[in-house]
Length: 601
Image: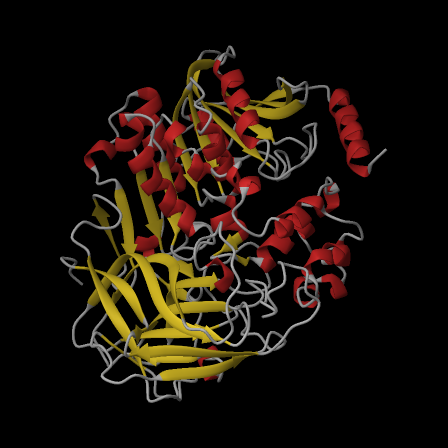
């Protein structure tokens, strides 16, 4: 008998011994405004069509009746942290809540296979909840991160009783904006989440809240240098973690990934959706793609017209201060109030004012203000090309790299050497969730002293330049091997020198023609690469400068490209690559900035 099965049996026996299976719970009133009791029913069995039983907790108003219902499902343990504060509040405000452990995790039966059962189980969970005696048949979904992805997956099956979904901080394409970015493997997150935190076993209760049980020699920063990646799981688990190995095996966007991609099924989603994300969140592109995909491809006029999006200056959840930067109290968001406005409107028919608001709400960094927009990209955006230039030595901030709206008069190039054994360390950016590096707007100056980073900086700005929208890099480059990576950062340089990253992108060169099209390079041949970067909204203020940093690694956020051209995770060896960036003549490397106007400081 496996450890996971034994744990489930013992836990179920414990529940059978509990005398009170459901109970009343009266949390403290909020400013004396709320005093109604609720009921919580634990360990409710819900049988799926294939015979597997999922278990859920119910949060219900104390007064029996039929209520609009909120469904959520998690792989992190429904009962890990006692009563869920948000669900208590929902029940106090007249909603029934059904909170599931996903298949194969904690109390629920079945095999844990990340991402692969959430669509079918989500559909059946919603439909089960809708016909229970506590439900009036109107269902919404709730949750962020993996739980947000679960909402997308379930909505893609068009459950008849689903009315609205609120997927926050969530991926919409597990391959393109979770497992990889530009084809580069998100090593620290995939290993930390997929092997350390979420292996194909049930974590024992004493380990539910922390990874501190890890022996020192197995902590992230000691393990992530291991090569090859394909057996890195053994460094922690001692046995293979199948889903981690499958991720490495399927290194391109093939049918394995397309089968679980929400972006392949936007045209099947019939209900309005509200996405929420952060400019520094690891799943930012999922937030954006969820809005644009639904607005364009939603299955019904209600779905297309009801697409909404909000993005703040956050990481993996709303905060006022992130990455050492205080974005002022304006940055904060009352998540309960925000959810209630959406749910009350769609499930209770209450006029909460959301119909009078613009569907896109963006926080503009730099001036630290919110502004409502009618679409993404912002209508009227001017796409301005900012050109790289140098005198042949843009290496480090001490070099002569420059950035201008003017095309370089002469043909030139810059060269650096990328050694996978001495990678550029991850410092800030779009990362999250217990990985060994700090995400967000971390100062880039310590990195910009390195000779293996090319630095291109504009003159001091006389006027504000505000960018809001998708950012792209057109890079003309050559390497002396058959594969390598190109890592780009857009940086806001403050008058005191602080270098704040506001957008980043990476491309594994073999995917230059598409994430589903792998083709190795001809050594020393010049290629034009189009590198998609994270969206942003930032005002570069007078006295600031705009900067582009270019290198070939960002470790351990992304795995180190060994420069050998071998399949992902298979190479135990590395080689040093000579990298050349061109920015003159017919090879005009440039970044494309989405410049918007009409926003006062």
